Length: 387
Ligand SMILES: NC(=O)c1ccc[n+]([C@@H]2O[C@H](COP(=O)([O-])OP(=O)(O)OC[C@H]3O[C@@H](n4cnc5c(N)ncnc54)[C@H](O)[C@@H]3O)[C@@H](O)[C@H]2O)c1
Image 1 (cartoon, rainbow, N blue to C red):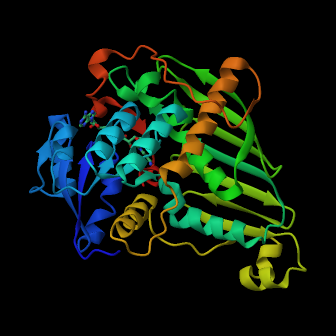
Image 2: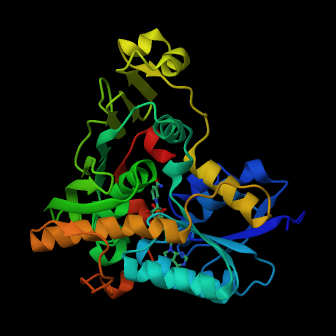
């Protein structure tokens, strides 16, 4: 059933990623409204007002938002360890949930979020923004068209230069859910699952440097897909290869098949090369040049957060929507990251599915459990990373 009414959204959290979400809402002003922001730190007030408007109230405790009867839905952009409790509280209050990636710290938490939303009859959507990004979507279209033949290899990586001091929730395993793999390689894991189907097993190695963060700052995952293809995923949070002149990239996806290959690199776009001249339809579509080199594929110009918010609001209004990141769907992404951690601790290859286990505390100080000093985070990212 469609509704003509504007969906009233409350933000739970108002930190760094608020700006990315606010690329979406203003474009939907006839269909929804950001009605309130819950942000614990007053230091964020000025930025929040600039982003959402000076008239939108800011409250300190997210439960105040959940108590507001006229709020239909919440956009949760809190630290990872709060995704579970905030979602449980939101479901209990009858609010639909959009939760930023990563869905939660492990599958045990994901399962509780899914069950609570099911029980309350509210929707649970994860903002895995890459699935909604124009260039990532263009690569998905190429893959799904079958033009690459049998896909046998995937390579995805993520590069940033991130130092997280102990004053930040993200420094701590308890806050971030492990380290850079759970935090951000989940972008690549989620993309891989979306493009190539489910993963059969993983082997993982990591390195830690406690002065940068408690968990791993570096991770390499090799995976066998259920399709039989192999995948290589890496995350490096101590590199500037993606910045400055003659840079490499922030994120890259490469896919190789028996009839062609394709890749997407941030800031450059999505490209395809054909190996099979007998596929006349493909040659007609991408041109003869695609037989001799990579040619650019046409991509939508929208960002991932912007589009995810738009599809979510459309879904809540009962309009045609392409929400492809339900809690149930995205649980699998957390499961792969958790399996990777189990590979590190056991030194073995881990097959999926894994048995859920409750989070075991790793020593995050009590006084960080809620409040975060995000200004102290040294987060060196380029423009492409800020989507
Ligand atoms: N998709 C992307 O590319 C991307 C990039 C960065 C962050 N993120 C995600 O966004 C989410 C938030 O990350 P961030 O970088 O904005 O972190 P952040 O530390 O900048 O923001 C978190 C905010 O939550 C507030 N907060 C903490 N406890 C609270 C509470 N109880 N009530 C109200 N506010 C509270 C903090 O004060 C802080 O301002 C995470 O899930 C993260 O993984 C996604």
